Amino acid sequence: MKNITPIWEVFVRAKNGLSHRHVGSVHAADARGAVEAARDVYTRRMEGVSLWVVPSNAITASDPGEAAALFAPAEDKIYRHPTFYVVPDNVKHI
Amino acid sequence: MAQTLALSPAELALRLGDDALILSHRLCEWCGRAPTLEVDLALSNIGLDLLGQAQFFLNYAGELDGNGRDADKLAYHREEHEFKNSLLAEQPNGDFARTMVRQFFFSAWQLLRFQELAASPDGTLAAIAAKALKEIAYHVQFAAEWVVRLGDGTAESKRRVAEGVIWSWRFVDELFTGEDAALRPAWEARVQATLAQAGLELPAPVRGITGGREGRHSEHLGHLLAEMQYVQRCHPNAQW
Image 1: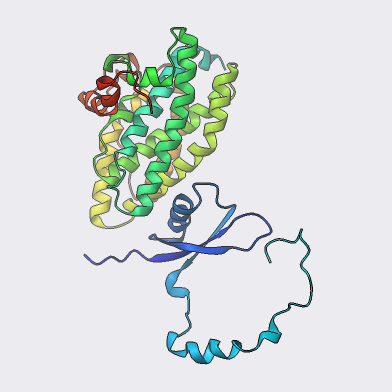
Image 2: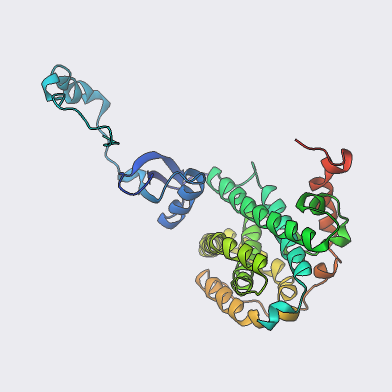
């Protein structure tokens, strides 16, 4: 039998103020079921306060064949890194 | 709240603790065997929630009983007829659909029962109930959604969930005996709403099977206890 249960990408917000981060994926028949599966698989040890699920087939990925064209030109442009200021100790998550 | 006073707190704690303990064991039997990894974890999570409830209730039951027994002693060193869980909780898992129906029926009952218990004059029971209610609300939702998904799914999933309803229905009466009878209309309304969404109907009344609350159990409980109590029976009071 063909497995037709869709895959969903799961994003977890660890705490308020932070952004949702990709943590993995789950199988579920519908969006509601995907949220519940994500809750059970990825937040059972208090990892998060909010969840997003997105159908995997809704994600458009960059083509690995274009990697050189897309990413290589950034390699020698170190002047794009803002290194001229000091991040205060109290500012986290940058 | 005269209704919650009809049973002694010790007896009530034992019943509710045994319900949670036995159903927890049933859910853990799915570990490694559930249809998908996601469902496997979900069932174990629910099982562990119930095990936590069982621990609180049974510790309290042991404390009131005054024989120096804690939750472990009560779980591992009692005979079958000393267990006071409902027959529904000890029913074999069957297929996934039947497990979901059993869970939905049980959790929907537990939700109503614990809402009442949270207002109990017994502070300990009220506190255990209040803590458990958040977990139970999720259990009801999770199980209800699976009942709908299966009922509204393929011809086979619908047949299986319908069979689960028939199987579990015989054990419903026992949940609403004595002081719990008043909870039945609210329970049936909740169950009927979900079954309607699933394209199923509330079964016609049947002669319910009771006895678990008095320690008269189905043949299934003995097998369950044989597995659950095995280590403590072989090595009494072993610890790790």
